[in-house]
Image 1 (cartoon, one colour):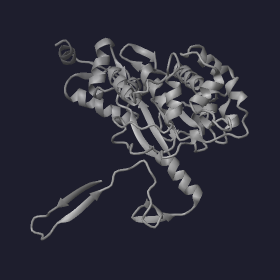
Image 2: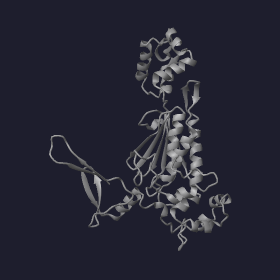
Image 3: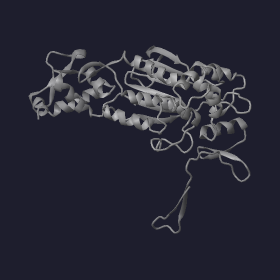
Image 4: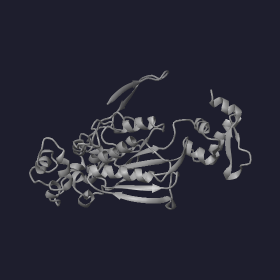
Length: 377
């Protein structure tokens, strides 16, 4: 908590401002009542299920620790995934011993925990009472609100966490291979830095709230990728400190995946930091992270860092002319009229002119002598 005394010139006295930072626990008043803030109201919460959900949301309790009494332990300890994992694990150990020592099974009853199914069951969605798969949807549009006609392809990915991550990245990469955009080198398949895509999907699998019955959603558009991870940011993590904060909602999942020979996570909390760094190195704008409803949403925009006029001039450095469609691909601007505005800026500066004889959909722009001289400086 932070305390500040504020004083206003011309007004007698002080105001005390108390800032209570977001914490990792569900707090109660002296009489044991729990309140949640809704707008300007503080409303009491008495329903046990609602209180449990608050604990999950805060990260005070993780659904990964819950037991699955109807799942035989043998489906975990004798499965292909745990045996594949232990092949490269050091020191050599038995599957049952490993799962017990790592608290993936309850020590007394040997009942599997949710995290054991997420890690080592061939189809976790079939044995966990909550939806926990990953859905990938391809929309052939750049619009914010796609319509049914824009839906081109949809896939559901299931499997143990390690395989789920690899399969999801491969499928998204495959979907992107069908998207072509204009670049300075001509019409090319859309590309994102592989590390940015990888780290964002890994982050969604590791840190989502598995108590929420929903799948991770990956939406592939013509100009962006959106990853929606169920659950709000846990503990003291918020949008402003997410790149610096270190908090793991699913500690057992994070720790065990880190022990794979080729670990998908480095367990250093650097996932989204790497995403930001690689997007910048690739010449693309920063990811956008928001909380929307009960989801954390990460958008990877395929938008260049360069200003629109700079992108247009760079294109004309290598090509004789540029159309409105090509400029929209280069700049990420969706509106034809907005692109025309960028063309007019360069025209008024004397750098470009319309290509004679081309009108309507075929209309294009080319460099003037002054524009050529500017680029040759």
